[in-house]
Length: 473
Image (cartoon, rainbow, N blue to C red; front, side, top):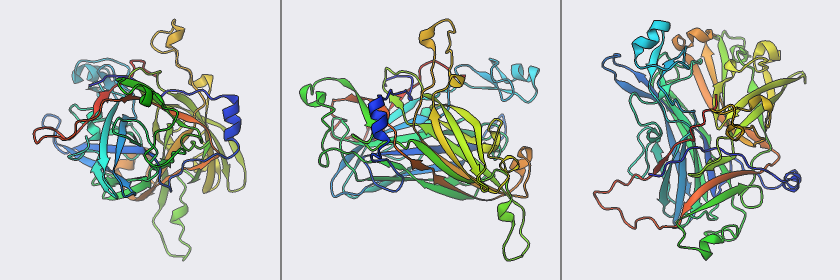
């Protein structure tokens, strides 16, 4: 397996490119087909239905990933499964003293009786998987179990107990464990070179079997980026080395999402929302009595400057800046959040000033513009504070996003959410505005894949990559 260490890296844009993008070049969407598709959220959750000494980890949430080839011809699809959370490089006391290293549970309990010693975890790592879609073929797989053609998402953190403790946020039962992240998929030829094939379509369904959200499900469409060159199956002229040097083992390639090679990423995201902890859905307009239904929102954001090479440049860090308006056209600013590679969080847990809260917004409905900007606030000194080459500098980066809304029956406070039933939930893509360039950097191996797998060969393919040991605190 090839080992590398970072998935998200910045790309510099020239003034000329930036001004050109402002003139309305093609932009990706979640309603069209494309040559490259992005699933911004994949999540698995487990709950222990056994005991601490005899655990029985049961999947309570799984994600089913669907991809279709809408064309009367075969195509290879190169995919990257990416762990959205950072690494635990050492065993740490969780959840209250997570910066303390430990050897066993007793060591953690001496400082806090609620802490236990959590195992090490891979983080911001990826595995690549290639599949063949035949003419007009749809396919799907479970993130938790994979299929006879696709590795499970759990290959990103393959140890016991499964996943890692879910962040101590609303909606997670105590002891729930999570594995989460995203998937990028794009059409390639037999040598792994990106090709134009604007016939790929994707969607995902997140299924909740048990726990506070189950039984139930929500689904969303993958974002699609059309290739903007040549006929179907063609390689872009930006990749001439694959014609001139077909024997090269590995070549680095940038998939430019710039409105010229592929459709561009939105310049900023538009998020229409119901205010956090609003009870707007408790008021029935027919006059009948309704239970109290409180709104809880979760937001997923991912910068689209991504480095999937073995020799990488470190994770992309950007500042998500939020500009909000309420129903009375009152504008709210001064709210931001540092995003390292990928971020998923409940809005109630955002730092102050949290304008998403009903108590602060002042109306049931609001809208937000979300932009990824460079900011000293999000810079990091890396592991060696005296080494400027180790510094991680935040950059301006275009993003994709997904929103999920939940209705909580009874309006229980955060500490008691796990004891209160959820009345329903739904997910939707964030709307894009404008266009901005991003870059996905990959290694391409020109060696052709094996022609046929024998009965003894595992059809699951992939190479595990892990992140640079530069921890972003």
